[in-house]
Length: 339
Image (cartoon, one colour):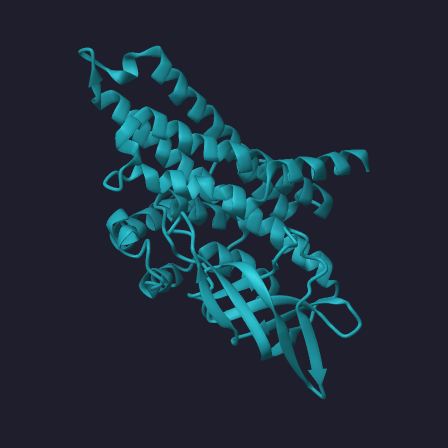
């Protein structure tokens, strides 16, 4: 196993970073932060770069750069989420998996799929649907008349944006009321959805690596420039410790994330699931702490709308929602170890 990036992968990183700097700068992120509107030009530009059909390791390079730019582009939800279950997807898709009062227990959905001759329709409500207002297609889990889990594709559904502290990671509630749908054939829907959720979880971790890395860089830059008692605050040991703690967390999270990406591409399913669970268990708590520590370095200015660091703090803070709690993943790791 070689953790060094190839020349082609470094070129991919350079291209994506340059594209986002030109087309999705912080000023553009701020412009849509509290709006339901979606700038499709960024998605179209990513498509033109040819990054919508990559394996997990190469896709992780794109995801890390999106996190670094706190870009609201629906890459993870569409490319990693929807396309995992619907490979021939065209346009923007997202997965509608979770339901009210079930936490992350997705395997027994209350959403019903009813068949009338050769046509299917969906009835139910899905919550925490990422990029719901931007999606052209929803990939939905539902149970048929026999109570079996099935996956469906639909372009219908009433969407309502959900409030969030992070305007760069938009979510919505989608209500399906007799919505026409197409059954997506899978040999084992449960296994396929579980694998998709591992991929999507790791995608969020890699996004967090990018956001945490940039938060660290901003904090270090500020520590070199901000002067107190005639010295840059970075000269004080307490601030140095904060920056060192952030660096350690970012590097540990990066190692776990990229190993999980490799495992999802090339390792047996059991190891891929273990690696994905480990990466999520670490990032769910550790990366929000990076955001909080960066705010400590900045002090009062870090809480203001005018400074960019709070955008990274919010991006990292919402990882705990996107990934689920660390305790849930640690319990899963314990079950894997016992088995």
